Image 1: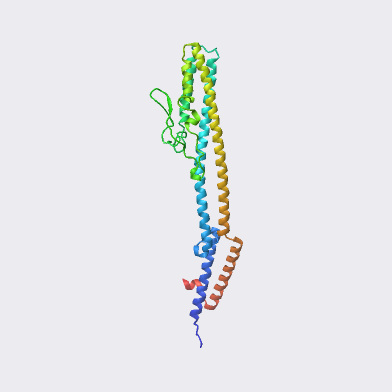
Image 2: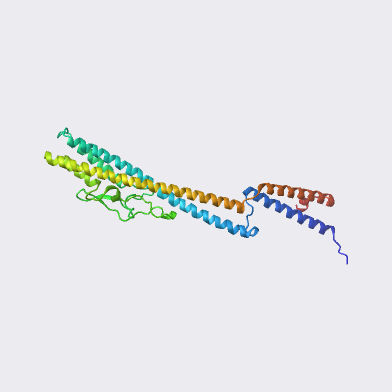
Amino acid sequence: MFVLVSGRQVASTAAERMVAIDNRIERLEGRIARGERFTEPAEDPAGQLRAAALARLDARLVAEQRGIDRASSRLALAETAVADAGRLLVRARELALLAANGTTGPADRPVIAAEVRGLRDQLLALANARDEAGRFLFAGARDGLPAYAEDEEGVVRYEGFGTAHGAEAAGIEGLAPPTGPELFGTDETGAFATLDDLLEALTEPDDVLRQQGLEAALAALVEDQDRLATAQALIGTAMARLESETERVAAGRLEVARGLASVKGLDLAAAFSELEALRLTLGAAQEIFQRVHGTSLFDRLG
């Protein structure tokens, strides 16, 4: 049995083939532009599943890094505040030594007392330092309100509670700034109480009692400085831990990027070779079509 094939059928088949080649060229050019081996799940279902899993892992690592960055920022601000507080206590001790050395007269003590009061105010401001989100650094879990406040009698008291959140969002327990009592002691024996005792000693008219008060304030200031130094060392340790975690996350994201490149990455040399071959094939097909049918494919399509 003979099958008659008309010229129109041949032209239609040739045209469909050239359109298919042109579509392959367009898809391949898109892949080259994106540097990806496939863009549709149907092109490589297994590869798409693997790429999706890697993308989820990368998203988790990005979220961890955000948590690390927040915790690092809070610790850095805490470190600065603690260092400044330490310098204030150093100056307070210098003033206490000056008042206790026997050469300071009655006219000098009010001047010293005025500076001590200024140091106390500055220390209170540092104790109520905030992070970039406006949360109080040293108030523990109750960080929406100031860590310290003066009562009606002018006594500075700790108003915080519990322990602040650290880097839990990054899967790391703790690493939060120290609480107020860890830095400034208790209401009765902390740095604020020491400065109040120093002020009281500076206004004491009795020479013996004044000297005893100054010596007691000097001893307490040493303890207050030691407490701040210990806390500062702990902050430094926590910051070093977070730096290590940052390196871990960066290494993890690098591995994810390599995995995605191996799954979705396009072999550009092979892709360009295939593109050139398709273009040559299309060009040859168009030339033959034009010679045989007296017009180009695009003339017919137009």
